[in-house]
Amino acid sequence: MQSDKPILILLVDDEPPVIDILSRVGQQLFPEAQFVSVESPQETLELLADESRQQPQLILLDIDLHQSVDGIELIPKISSITKKHVPIVMFSSSVSDSNVQRSYKAGAVAYTQKPEDMEGWRNYVAILKRFWYETSRLPRKSED
Image (cartoon, rainbow, N blue to C red):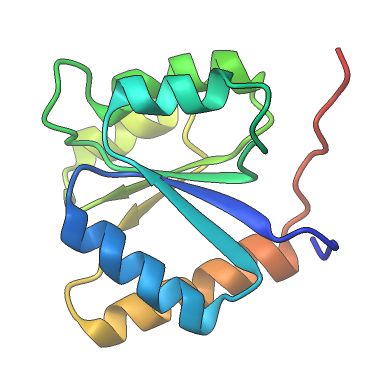
């Protein structure tokens, strides 16, 4: 997925420590990416609907956003705005089979668990870089 522009990764999570650590580790190990974060479903939808902003190539989405709408319920709304051109990866501390099933059924392309320690964060970002930046090919935004 090599390109001249950095890959833009949108992190949707309401926990500042998670946002901070992922941003710091991401800068160190995945400098080709720009991590942008929002903390609520409303901020997510507003950012994605703003046509003046560069759209993300990947969305990391937490389930528990401590709002009336959880991350899984947000997937169809995101998919509608992005016309399903942006892969949504669930990024959660939950290991519930029900949440995994619901996430895939709603349209997530992967379900990942938040790391528990610094080594786990480094591994997560390294895997994210290898797969989503070096291995996968993401769709270009269509002009429809």
